[in-house]
Image 1 (cartoon, rainbow, N blue to C red):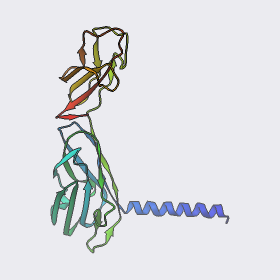
Image 2 (image 1 turned 180 degrees about the horizontal axis):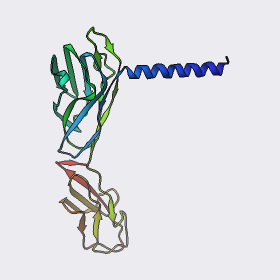
Image 3 (image 1 turned 120 degrees about the vertical axis):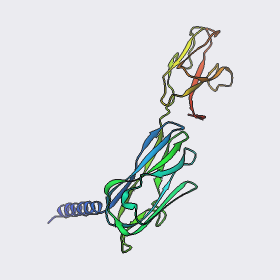
Length: 238
């Protein structure tokens, strides 16, 4: 048998072993969701191959600037017996559960987290680095192989896109209407118009606009103008 054939056999063997290990491992996924600033986001934790588990230790890290943890809900019925604890400490949610009656869930939602969205986007990260922070064990204390998939909370408040006139325009009408696209989350808009690109000479600074247009008057035909706009929701600027 040639070296190439041996390498192929080894590769096939490793793939087979990997497939067996994955089929016997618990996969834990924190689902990625989008939400508007100020809204409460409900984020499921989904598990697969969750069988004969007698103890749970989970630690989820999150950005306290982007969102605030509120509570959990819809804990799976299989965890109704035993002792369930959840602590929210600084930027970590720490979960532990133990029972003399091992839980069988299979493929289902373990529980749901509730966060209030402040604005922005950030990952939800399982702490797989710290020993014992993310693991499952059986009735005899044996660690069950497990994989953990991170998620995100993504702000649904997108940045406005300038429609007309183009930024840094010259030779425009002296009484133009500034138009931009609408954004998700029903925001209000803050607009600035300047004669320089760094906005050190602002001639219009208007806030709290609900429409996606703004009428301007008294401009000079030969002057180049710069404008930008921000969407605001629940006191958060994007």
